[in-house]
Length: 168
Image (cartoon, rainbow, N blue to C red):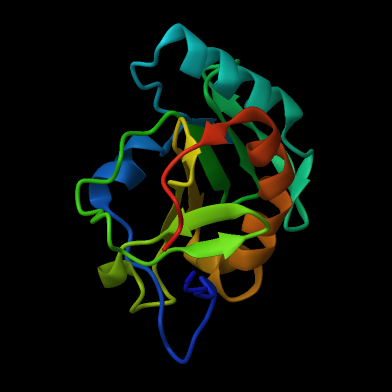
């Protein structure tokens, strides 16, 4: 049985951002978003490059933004930016029995302790595909854009990334 969770606003629930992840994704210059480049196999790097090349020009109504390094394993949209990073490691606090939300065929996981404050940024990790993809959703977009953004990313993620962990 698959448990479906809505990752957007749910009766006062939200997400608290990890300081380390936010630091890794901060802008290196105004208007340019820094994408962390993880150590990837050649196959995973090729999958991430194909995914990034196929990502939409807009996400949840926000235009695509410049990222550093150019050609890196990710993309950004808007200001404050939604930031997608491909090839992230499995989150250290993920448990194989944790619930995730299946949105258009992609299973997204958010840490339980991040579901308590809509005023904070959210980190959704697509663990049902490999290499893993993370989407940072700024708090400004929490009430109107997280589920929409994840749904809009699903076709490209399903097309370019292999199946990973099943969504419970």
